[in-house]
Length: 275
Ligand SMILES: [Zn+2]
Image 1 (cartoon, rainbow, N blue to C red):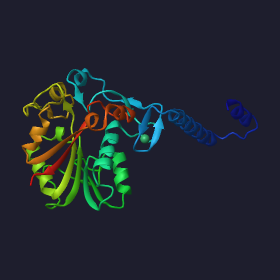
Image 2: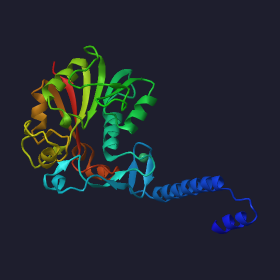
Image 3: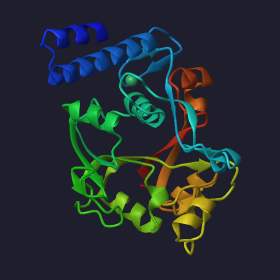
Image 4: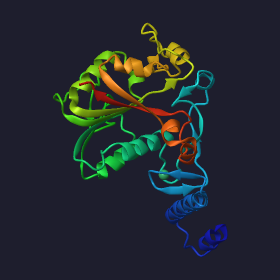
């Protein structure tokens, strides 16, 4: 290709702007080849883009905190990113659960999705049955700004609320759950996940720890306010929720978890209002 550029320069036909397009073309072709190579395999399966893959990319913070404390849902993982659709392990877990264990894609339903995972968002927006809205405390990240401790929607609005990796950032957890329950329909469901520390029998919370440095040291991230422990189900039940704990390994098996590149021990909480 360099010879071609040199030759074109010699006869005065080379223009820099064309070279830019050439670079873009070569880069895209290289990316496509990479995907083709990665797709040539059957070690992993991405349930979001339905690709069989030889590899998934690693991702996550390589920090001893997550390893020593056995924190599920955080830290470095070897097989996280799908090379075709860029979905993450957490997105694939949530999508698997929504598709197999809820009627969110088949029934007419109204859905509120906090801090939306982009691949899940795309799937739900495509669904004709779903009246879907996203919310985030940070302006510009979602359809509307929503403070989870002061939700602007009226009582009993939603059939489903999806709220992954949010509650570990919320100081007033009790108020947040009270608001989530208020805007859920009586038969509504909350799909929730947080990082869970499997080495702590009890959730570690100290609301006097407010500096980013100390939060990082105690909870594993500068903006986390607690580290959930093995008591999480009991803790959530105290807020008047009926909890089904969905641990992928136990429900679907280790083999399928490895195939989908999911996190060992990863789990979701499927919550209903107590009647
Ligand atoms: Zn994919």
